[in-house]
Image (tube, rainbow, N blue to C red; front, side, top):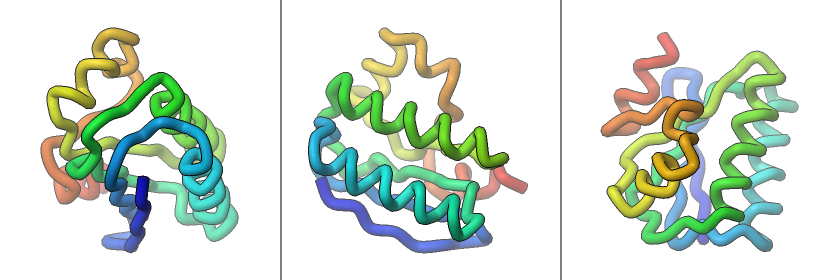
Length: 112
């Protein structure tokens, strides 16, 4: 998995590419989120358009980030979920925990 980041309208946008399988990428993702919190960049949108697969470790990575951001007064919003990515969220009922948007711009707009 590759992670790229940019800030738009005071929202950190993390674009993930590849598979969310946990492991080393979850360590990298956690470091990015922890640094964002340290920099007081606590509103995050995760663009999942380029993610083909996500297992339970990938879900755990997102839950951990959401928990950290919410405990810091921010939030994590998901954007561009394919049916293949949305399905595990529905099965685990995490679709009721994560706010999901059709586009990154909608996720950014939801912070206003």
